[in-house]
Every structure is written in C-alpha cells, then in structure tokens.
Image (cartoon, rainbow, N blue to C red; front, side):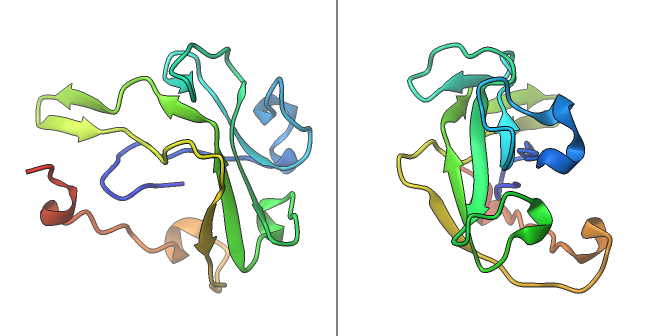
Length: 134
C-alpha cells in the first residue's frame, strides 16, 4: 500500500510468499503486514514485537490471497509508525501510513490487464500543493 505524499509503502503478503512473511500473532492465511519493532508502534503508541499483526486486507467475499481480491477492498490497520517523517539532505520526507482505525478503510479497485504490477499500477501524484504542509 502506498499513501499519497509518503515515501514508505506498507508491503502486505499472502501465504504464497511463504512462512517467513507470516505474522507471529496473526492468522496463517490472509493478506497481512507484520510490524517491525524498529519502525512501528501499536495503536496506543506502545512498542510492538517484530512480526506482530499490523495490517490486513480482504474484500467483501473474504479473499485470503492477493490474486483473489476484487471489487471493494477492506484495509484494516492496527499500528502506527514510530516516526512520521525523516530528515534527509534534500529536506524532510513523509514516512507515515494509514491511521489505525476500528473500521476498515474501503477502497474501490478495478481490474487491469498485464502481468507485471510495476507496468500496470498507476503512479501516485505527489503534487506539492497536496503534499506540502504549508
């Protein structure tokens, strides 16, 4: 998941990526992002252990594999980043992601032809008037 104006994507994996991508406290099926203790906190701002379930995605039919997702996608987030921005030589970069929520985010999707995700996924538009806090 990439958020507009942020350079930090959350990478969610399903069971096809192998056991190494599964969360320690999460389901063994499903599409999940596991927390990294050096970068993430729980929803209360407390420390988390590595591989704690942090985010998940499904659809209205309960898809458990990325390739089975269709229609509206439901994104559940239960963590937050430790830092929301970093300072680099070029200036500050936003590394925030979706805020945790009791209710899942609902995002409409559409089917695109092609096998290489990098070739078919649209680029996010980070226009300065949208992303700059000023």
